[in-house]
Structures are given as C-alpha cells and as structure tokens.
Length: 188
Image (tube, rainbow, N blue to C red; front, side, top):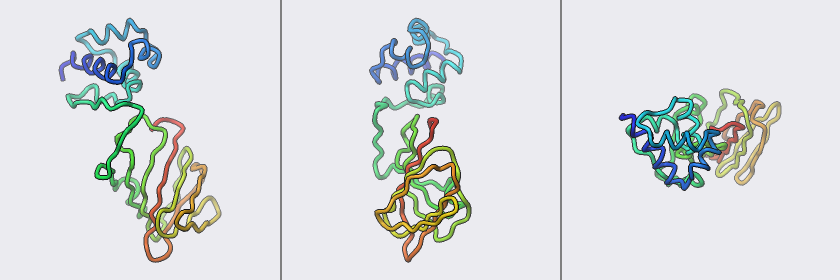
C-alpha cells in the first residue's frame, strides 16, 4: 500500500462521517492542526496515532493500512441483511451450539447479538465479563445459572450477570432457538 493513501483514507472517512477536524480532534485527543498535517502528509503517523484515529472513525486500524476499500456507512447504524448473518463454527461448535451473529459488520460495539441453536446436552459452563440477555424463540431450554436450574419456554427470557457460571440445553423434541445479546463493558 502506498503511504499517502492512508492520509487520503482518513480524510475520506472523516468527511463521509461528516466529522470536522475539530470533532475528530476531540474524539482522539489530538490537536486539529496535527490531524490536518496527517491528512496532508505523504507519510502516515505512528501506529498508536492511527489506532486512535481509526477508533474515532469506527474502523479497524488494519483497514487504514490495507488496499481494501472502506465502507463509508454511518457509524450510527449498521444494517445486516438476512443473507449476511454470520453463522459461526467458532466458540460454539465444541459446546454443541450453533451461533448466528446478527451484527457482524458493526465495529466498536458494546453488545453482541446472536441467534443460538442449543444442543440437547451441555458440555461446559460459560463465564465472561459483562451482562447477557436471552430470549427463547422456539423450543424449551433448561438454563443453569450458578447452582440453579430454570425451565424457559418460548417467549421466556433471562437477564443476568455473565461473570457467573451459566449454560443451557434443549429439552423436548426440537432444539431450542434463543436470541442472546451479550453486553461487554469494554468495546468488542
């Protein structure tokens, strides 16, 4: 990638997001003059500075460093069409769960929404920072939180501190499908 194209990307993203240099300066704790010099330079700033700018603009720093075009979608909303949901084999598969991410394109998010199809057996407890909300869309779920078991039917929900051990398994004849929203105290 040509170094001068980094400055061009920064300027294009800033203007596409309707950010003035002053607003970007406030978001990054950099001066307006320094940001102007970055945008007009053929040399990129240090990676730490690029990271601050990319965070403020809502893109991953690697996007600024690549030849790949960056979407100028507004930060305020991300639309994910049905065909764009990311079905993941990631952390769910070893546990018998299938995860479908609802907002894979949104950067800098505090929440992570999923559709989860739950296995009929449980293999391990989950524990992670933050809070979690689950809503049963189909089937019946036996949900374990700390030392208690709860039976949740279609339409039931739970909101809990996810730092405590929790897990679930499907009951009945069809796998339970649940919508889960995970909230993290730090940006995902």
